[in-house]
Length: 366
Image (cartoon, rainbow, N blue to C red; front, side):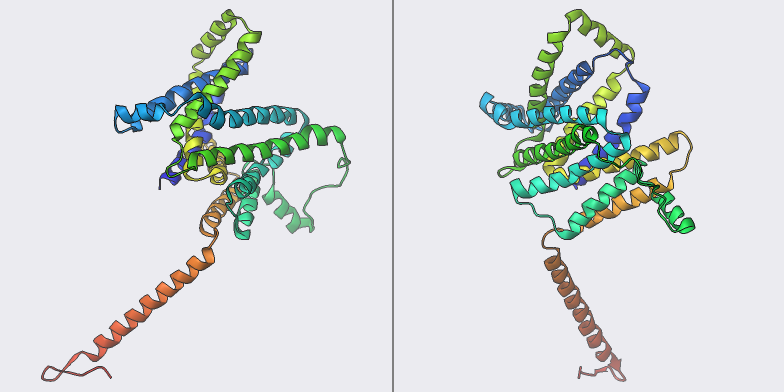
């Protein structure tokens, strides 16, 4: 129940982020590094506060905080933080060399990479049905985003007998697009799966695993040190105060706060649901974004968005119910159902033959 709650909250946060970002944008000229710094700072503060609130006593809070040693911090937070930084570099490179449509399609491979690394590092197997569900999720995502026009393809197939994909001109091999766009995007997706799996392994290790709030705080603190050194290396203190005033004046703290909450929710979803299921929550957020925009602008969802939503829901149900050992569970459930039906038949037969006759004599069951 807790995992589903966190996934729902993450989907809601993901859906609200573009709304807040569009309404409370600080405008051009603000270094993006400063915005990320503010996000990581807020995430660190919120994580500590949540850790304090969730601790039964102050003594328990201090006990958990005492586990934050330099060795533990570097061991558990260093590698994921570096991986996420490298991932961002490859993403920025692919942004500049791929069309938005191409990027959205290739970026969906990150859920598959999470499943692969969960198997390699944690031994978490995916059944063939679950792999098909992940593929269904990817198709649903690009339908919701408008990348894949399923409705248009179906209409073209009905009218002309073809999918309406057009001719094959422009599909010649482009080395620059391949090695500066496609390959970096695939590498970024792979790194995303690797970093997510490492985080999941750390959070779920041992009897109760590492505290998610503490780990979120450690990751944010590591990132904050790196980002601050990078920012102040190329900026003056006056630039910092001026840009910070612009952020406050534009009320950009709303999207920053929402993004910080999203980072903490990602940790909770990874701990209790896993890095693969996190992908389902984010796709749910994309669908929820489309629904919010439809409500705000009084427009209907497109056919592609509806198809994508149905595919995403079906993928979630399939992936949740057809994991390793689902055949054995199905057999056990069938046996229980058979025994229950047999017992009901026996009881019904006994009642039928035990009815009173005449002077109250009972007819014995034959």
